[in-house]
Length: 138
Image 1 (spheres, rainbow, N blue to C red):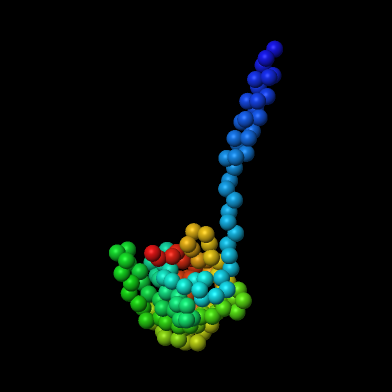
Image 2 (image 1 turned 180 degrees about the vertical axis):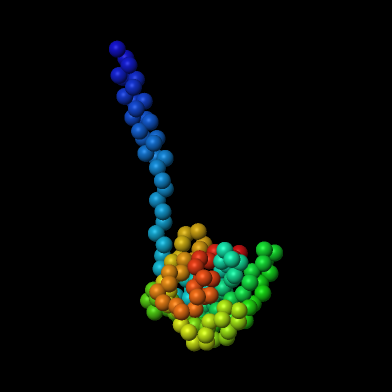
């Protein structure tokens, strides 16, 4: 009979196709280690933005769907110590973070133009909330 000869290649082909349709590998996030890694404007799901500058300064504000940005008055500095990101508010605005209160995070740079801030220590809850996940602004 020819049935086994036909079935074997068919089963083999189906097995190969099913294996190829498996889940795609997820790219490993890269930990940021310098201002250059995160420089630019980033927006949260809640429509707040952070602009991180290569000189180690940042500003915070509200982002509007038409592309306008309204600074909230929050400004500060940041630096990296290896993979540790330290952010400090030097001028208070709507975030109400006490001046000189330092937050410590690790920043994961994701392949999809996103930053994920993993809190290590930060007593400013408003900052923790707005840094939860940011997407790159064009």
